[in-house]
Image (cartoon, rainbow, N blue to C red; front, side, top):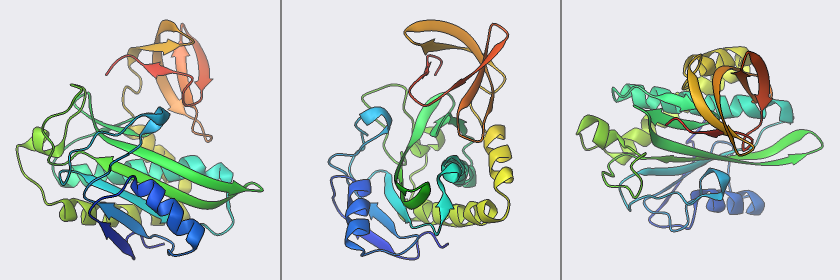
Length: 243
């Protein structure tokens, strides 16, 4: 598995994930193909949110994976792998980050990177995966005050290509670990989990509660302790109120 072995460089696109999906359906890509764009006109985030990104300022890319007989049960591990690669990329540039479950990347309580994974599944096997990344690099003004960037954190201008190359290397490293010992991926993901073993406020079914993140299970569900009782949550069943 070689992330970035083939690269499509675009000046402008609606969404790198959409471009990747078209490549897959047209069979015009390799395993590990990357799509890199200077601008997205309709970038997407989790929960169908729009991903805000200033042109030529950020790392906007998607990776294509064409797994061979990989069980759908391994989907969470690919999410963890990508999250760890992003954490390592930021560390390379002397920025310490945490993973806000399931895969937002946070620095000093603010979001610096969003991830959007889209999969094609058939008969319990992963046929294709698209790993979408929106990493704030040189943008310094955002419509929301809960966002940050590499430049805001370091006061340094970065070359987008350099950040992209570091991410490719990190992805290839963690992909090799995933293939050889998946449980290492889970252990390292937990070590970087935002608010782990910390009491914080969450919204569950419209109700505010105080809970404490204890772990993530093999299905990627969040294990939260509320009033001494441990409960599991899927994505979209719980909202972080502490950020």
